[in-house]
Each structure stands twice: as C-alpha cells, then as structure tokens.
Length: 170
Image (tube, rainbow, N blue to C red; front, side, top):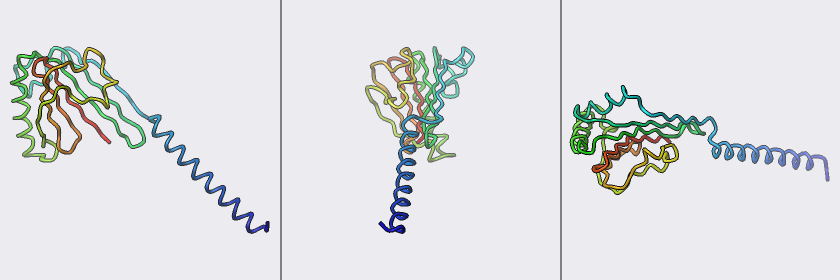
C-alpha cells in the first residue's frame, strides 16, 4: 500500500478505537453509579415529636425513617421520609395534607399540583432497597398523591398508619 493510504487507515482506526473506548467508559460509569451517595437514618424522638405537626397538631408519630440516594452520571436519585403514625389519625392527616397543598398551590402551582387516588400498595421500587424491613409498606388501602410533574409521591395507609413522602430526581 501507498503511504498516504496507510496514514488514513491508521488514523481512522485510532479515532474509532478512542471513540469506542470513551463510549464503553461512559456506559460502565453509568451502570456502576459513579459518585453515588446513599444516606439512611432513623429519626430521633425530638424529630418525631415535631414531624407532621404542620398538617395536624394532633398527629402522633410513632417512628420515622429517612433515606436518600444521589449521584450517578446525571445526579439522579431520590429520597424518602417514612413515618408510622397512629392509624386513628390518618383521616385527619389526609385532610390536613390536602388543605396544606391547596394553600401552597396558590404560591407554587407547579410544585403542589397533586392527583389523588387509592392503591393497594405504594410504588417505592426505585428506593425500596434502602428501606429496612420495619419500614416496608404492609398490606392495606393507601391514599396516593402524585405530583403532576412526576417528582413527588405521598402514600398514606389508612389502616396501618404508614406515611411516605418520596421524591425522585432524574
């Protein structure tokens, strides 16, 4: 082969190899969750006594848990706060939550625009691996509030007093 053809072939092969290597590195980085951070903790007694009081001062929170997972290629992840409350107060909690969102919607219409429905179990699949067994949702009927922008979900178990605020960022 002539010299100019060899130069073109070697240059093309080098560019192709570098491009393929960078693409494989990008995929590997995305799958291993580079720079991801996971934080979990149970709430202290002081935090529990103040939790959810802005929604209804009579709510008695028995236990609480927080988890967050951030990082990855795009800084994606999510967070959740789970509370166990006295089941007898869930009706008042739901009413207080809806009132709270109505007031906040006046100020921030995109952030507090929720659609409410009922389901047999909340969907926590993206963060379920972070939740300890004692804070996993049990069977029952859940009132689910989903933000129309898709970033936030609220799940409240009517019979079991399970309350979960979940956020996802992608």
